[in-house]
Length: 167
Image (cartoon, rainbow, N blue to C red; front, top):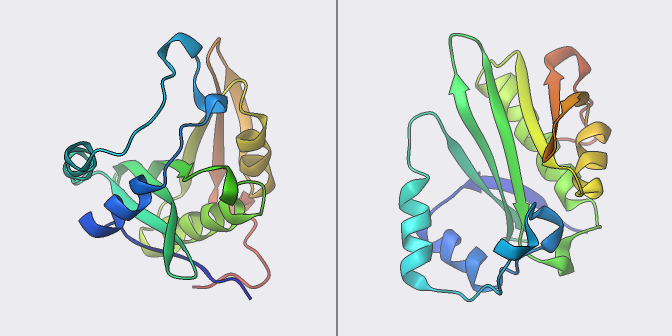
């Protein structure tokens, strides 16, 4: 049985995630900007440090205790009671298996229950149909699009928790 969980990102988990990370051309708007990824400890440290801001919570997606993705709740606005969700899975070996769906549900559950958010926003690159499908599956509704992104919103009432989701 697989065990997916979200845990706060630590520096060690950040490094473990990026050691096996592969860039996905499906999330790049401009393929000219796409380049091969190589793990660099200094860049992983810089990334970890850049994520440590008060309006953001970054979780690592663990599969059987191994980091396979990251989920962010960013632009957290306690007054408006909303935030924005972002997700990246490590590489193709963990995509298409429902892990992103489980991770997004857990993050939404945290946003609504622990943070008291009323709504969570998200966006997906136009060509990333897989991400758009997952957003809609967990309860996000399509709002609008522009040349690069499709924008979504999930209200507390439209969130669809999994039958066996954890508190």
